[in-house]
Amino acid sequence: MRRIHSFAVAAAALVAAFGAVPTASATAPAAPAPLAAAFNCTPGHFCIYSDWNGGGTRCEWSQGSKANTADDCSFIQRGQNVRSVWNGTGHRVQYYTGTNHNKHVGSTNAGSGGNLQGSYQIRSFKAQ
Image (cartoon, rainbow, N blue to C red; front, side, top):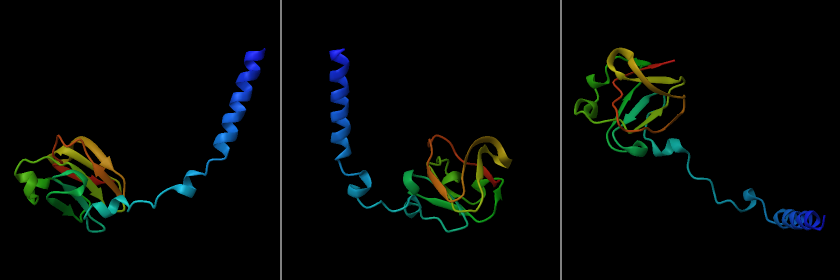
């Protein structure tokens, strides 16, 4: 019984100690810039990049569907992989490693993006 009582006293002391610590919001540093600021993509467009974090060569499209990104994307034509994306459209965008919307590999919600695995090309896409 004494062991249980000691545990309860120790637990109460911890609660009291942590209760006295300022909350994270009171001491948190200023929030970083939104992720969108790291990606240079025209609003209303779907963008793919040859490097991480929106770096390298950018290809962008305003249309909701593209059957072959190599038609007008220089780094895809050179055989480089897509390392990051940004979806500035108002719709979720599905993307594929094959032309004509074959071999679905992923999708990105409207107004978001980020780094991909980086081991494949996006050869076609379409908005959902």
